[in-house]
Image (cartoon, rainbow, N blue to C red; front, side, top):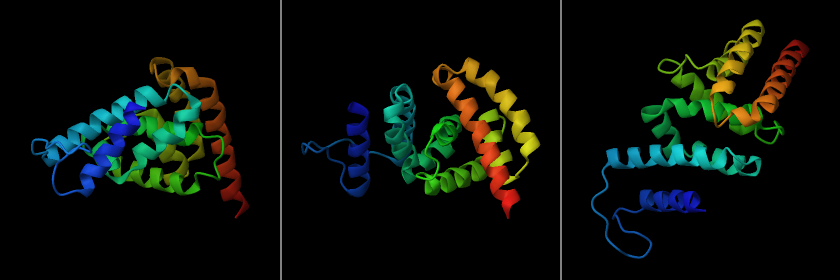
Length: 178
């Protein structure tokens, strides 16, 4: 797809010292600010394109978890963290993404100082950072209102609520077992 090609081209550009395209044409000097803006726009477009189809969620997760995109999201568009956290919750195969879960939790934890008002982010915080299960249940109710208003996540509302409840229960059982 076009988004995937754009991501690959940005990764190639990051690895080269000169700014040329794959066809050899020279581009104008790309400043770090321009790269930040391009990655931010690409993260937005990737969310718009990939959140619609469940099959594309792994690709979106790969894009958003790239270290350059993660920095861009934290710096320029922290509201994209909502979709990153949502992908963590929506993923049914939790064991497959255990390493991704840890990375997302670290990203959320470092971004809490600037973007902690989102209920989905608060759910991750309650569940994996503070281990506040009552707070997680209360926050899940707030997530319902957010999911009603968010056009990208609304089609996945029922799955989100079901998987979030499952995550709360699973985490509680795992901690209580120890």
